[in-house]
Image 1 (cartoon, rainbow, N blue to C red):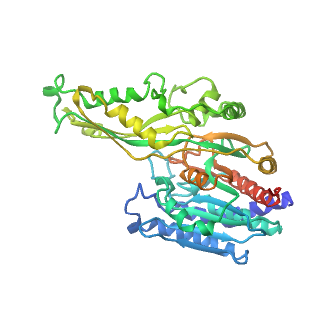
Image 2 (cartoon, rainbow, N blue to C red; image 1 turned 120 degrees about the vertical axis):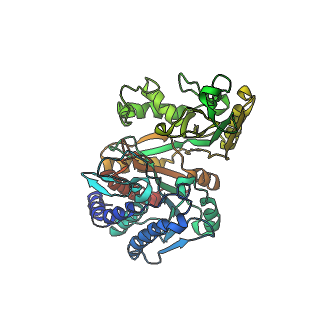
Image 3 (cartoon, helix red, strand yellow; image 1 turned 135 degrees about the vertical axis):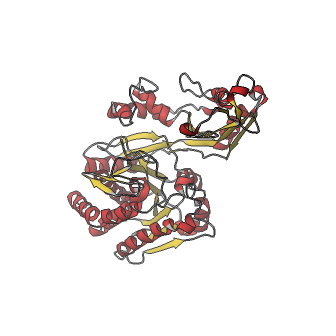
Amino acid sequence: MDTQRLKNFIETFWEDSILPSITEYIRIPNKSPAFDPKWVEHGYMEDAVKLMEAWARPQLAAFPGATLEVVRLPGRTPLIFIEVPGDSQNTVLLYGHLDKQPEMKGWFEGYGPWIPRRLDDKLYGRGGADDGYAIYGCLAALRALKEQNVPRARSVIMIEACEESGSYDLPFYVDHLIDRIGNPSLVVCLDSGCGDYDRLWLTTSLRGVASGTLTVRVLTEGVHSGDASGIVPSSFRLMRQLLSRIEDEATGAIKLQDLYVQIPPQRIEQAKAAAAVLGETVIDRYPFAGGTQPMADEKAELVLNRTWRPQLAVIGMDGYPAPENAGNVLLPYSTAKLSLRLPPTIEAKAAVAAVKKALESDSPNGAVVEFNGNDGQSGWHAPQLAPWLEKAVTQASQEAFGQPAAYMGEGGSIPFMGMLGEKFPNTQFVITGVLGPHSNAHGPNEFLHIPTGKKVTMAVARMIAAHHERPKA
């Protein structure tokens, strides 16, 4: 394969075909069902599916026998399923999603979640990097190989519409399509992050999550604080007590030992290597306010905190009026939405049960305490790379970025990976992405770093080609 020709093709294809379409995709407020319960009536998800389908069908004309189907199971979000015949019956499965996180406040003036805006190398707007570019990058990689007649295996592309809600529809689609998916020997996921924009980053693990709402109720209705304070305990104070059972408020360390695992030595060494590569970027990628300091001094420890250690975040509160509307009332209850990130190898359901037991037992002052969680989402730990894939990753990063590849766990979750790992235990995984420093997925001012999108596409093409050439067992 001619590397320069590959680079030129992908550069032109991105500028002329991908970016115009993904710009229109950003305009669509197709929030994931968890954030838009009326997604069917609103029709935005359908708009996004139709946009991607309309773009993809002409690309598939280059591949005789290729098919695209929008699969629709009753009561579930749609899924785009593409099959592209190859030069062998081995299968590469490529994955992404098209649903989006909600708007969030704090966008730069003149920018917004549904306002695509290109500034130099960045395309701002919700969903471009997480994960709208995936279908475009997958098909661009296949088109680039076709342009040079490079042989490859059969390819299956799955783009779901429920990932940001926990992929609760996806298991039904996997079961429904399992015969058509086949038995993939390589899975490529483009929904992850990158430590910087200077090299290809492979995700070695994903944390799980145990989430739920904690409610502490002390009254059946609010009463005047001047009358009740000193007699009725504050629900906020009691909630603070309960959270201290889970988390050390001085250090942020989780107290429940059931939520820890022994970190594999290889992952510790990779965290040290990633920290050495990233340097101050480990910290500088976050918009710290004022003089706020990180939770540890050692950068490798921060990487491990983010990828292999449990951490708690309070991500929502209820029971309180806005400050400007707050009267002198002792409020009847406090509700907090808790998000507890889990080590990759912890079983999420057991973690949720441990949290529930710690919070609900022996309630302070006899208050009504309830933790409503679900089964959580278990994380994922990558199998060791086969020698052929490790070599291909090294070559792909060097060709596309001019730098060696780097390896690091990610702090978020991709439920599909754990699901596939269980169904296909002998499969090789390449989990990568474009969400680098300040790209701010889920937050304000999210952007797609365009050069990284192009380079990741180039790297994917190289790895698909190497998969076809790998030594057969």
